[in-house]
Amino acid sequence: MSETTTLNVVICTYNRAKRLSRVLDSLVKARVPDHTFVEIIVVDNNSTDGTRSLVQALSSHRNPSVRYVFEERQGKSYALNKALDKLSGDMIAFTDDDVVVDQNYLVGIIDAAKKYPQYRCFGGKVVALYPDCLPQWLDLEGSMGFLKSPFVDRQDGDDEVPYGEATYYSTPGGCNMFFRRSALEENGSFRTDLGPKGKILGFSEDTEYCCRLKDKGEGFYYIPSVIVHHPVYPERLTKKYLLAWQFNCGKSEATRHAESDQSVRLLGVPRYLFGRALKHLIGWTVSMGPRTRFFHRLRLNYTWGEIIGHSKGKA
Image 1 (spheres, rainbow, N blue to C red):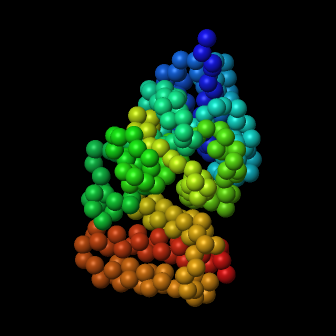
Image 2 (cartoon, one colour; image 1 turned 180 degrees about the horizontal axis):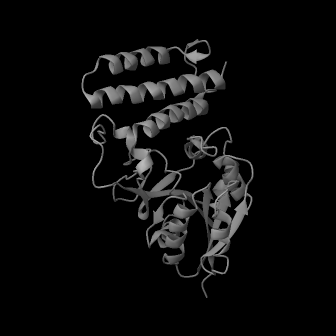
Image 3 (cartoon, rainbow, N blue to C red; image 1 turned 30 degrees about the vertical axis):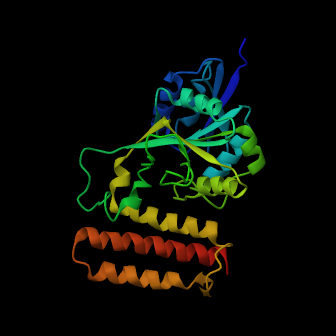
């Protein structure tokens, strides 16, 4: 008789009950691998909507089972760390509260673990679901390709390969990464100075966590058959959101690197950032085309975020 494998799927959430219901529905309807017990762990990060009742209504489900956990301290990293204390699975997957998983998502995770026993860290494909019409000021296939990140469009082809060999990204995205539990136990907690906090945008908690593993010599493997679909919601298709995303992303990345950046500094900030800010300020001021102007404004916001992040992270 085959031994049973346990898979934990972690979802941290804050005031997104309606969207959370979609991902939970897709998970409980997904194919469960043979000889596998799946437990979905939902960490409610101090929500004030119907999150608790939504999750607890699924408590009678058996495989996957659904477990409700509450974390009062505001911040996704606090919620992730609370989840780390609740893990029991052989494999641990992390996804987000605003996605829909593919029907074979769970099967793909277990198959990958069996196929690549020498690896402990994996990531899958994230397919953004764009609306039929995008704003004319967006240039996703050109100068603004970096904006695929806030739309969570992370596709690295259709071949199973180690990250960094034939992939654009060096580590998986936070909404589709999975690990053997031993790797997480050795890596420790997520940094609580990174990531979103309630309604405040924040980033890099997942990137920093994975990079820490890589720095320890851990390899990551890309499994394109493990798919999550990420709807591009209307609020992300506004200039206001994207400008805020750029600022907070730059701030998070600078915070992540503040201690290791050895660049010449002015007022505690790497000096080259002031030149970059001036370049994009001039570009925003003098450019005629709306796409070019918006490109420079985006990069100016990112650079300003870096300046703020560095000034707070290292004096």
